[in-house]
Image (cartoon, rainbow, N blue to C red; front, side, top):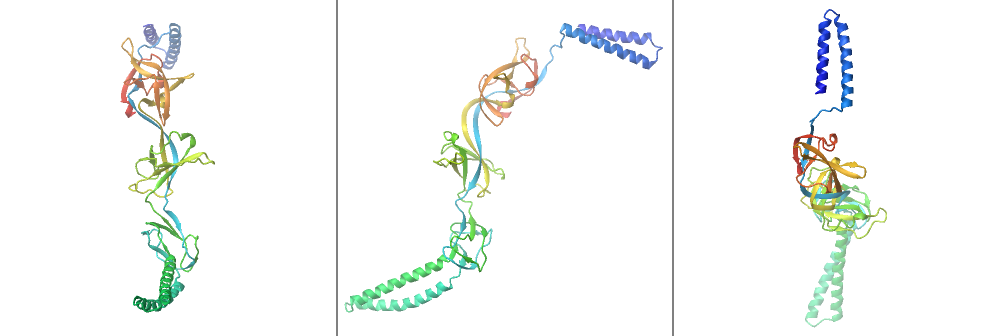
Length: 381
């Protein structure tokens, strides 16, 4: 009321000044009025500070979140790599000169398909000679066997012919096996990634010739610090996310965990099998594995940025109805537990269905009169 009286007085003075000095120069009159206005405003401010005059019922606009109990899980994220036991640099078992290369990079091959061949001309000549010799030995053996069956011939002659026959059979089989070993075959069905040598070049056992890979039976190998050993177990659920793919996050299980700890980096290895139905995943691709280290089925969970500190205590603001029927802010001291990403579990201090101030929380104090403009559910925040 006093503020209003002062303002009306100011207006009256201005009107009086205007009517009493109609003949003055407009610029001079305007300068005088401004000086009077400044003087009156200073006087108003002085009186307000002395009388502690404040504007009443000024409401601070806020938004609130209706709390409810929900599941809360804390994860630890690990950078991991996709591994394949069918990612091989193939080599021949015998030495020789390459005569044929039957595949190109990018080709899909079946298990047992011939990828390249080494020169087998010498082995084929040996095989032809052995077969010619075998025909004669076989003829002798059959005659000796016929005589022996009639109880006529010598047993020694029969046994010698039989031994020669069986020995030559084995010799032919060995030459044929050697010829087969001069062929490099695919050990599994997969894709040819690289063909390293060229026709005419010599190969020896141990020299890489063809690089093959397969996307079947892939697995993720994730290394985690040993302090998580009690929380990460075989059979636990794990989330696998591939940043470079459009695939959804995979919900899988830990297939196995190493029994030893790497002495260099103090980590253990968890293996997660990837279903064959998952597309586009490649060996050596990086991914993110999320291991659950804490989980509760019922908790009050709020955005961590709403938790404020006062000395060594933490608090939030909630919207409550005052005894005068007005909606006000209330400082509520809380105990927080585990946090993950931008959420934190409230162990004590808040209950379901209470209204937590979100937008405007930094503009209120204890018992500030507020105006709630929006209410959102906890799960939708």
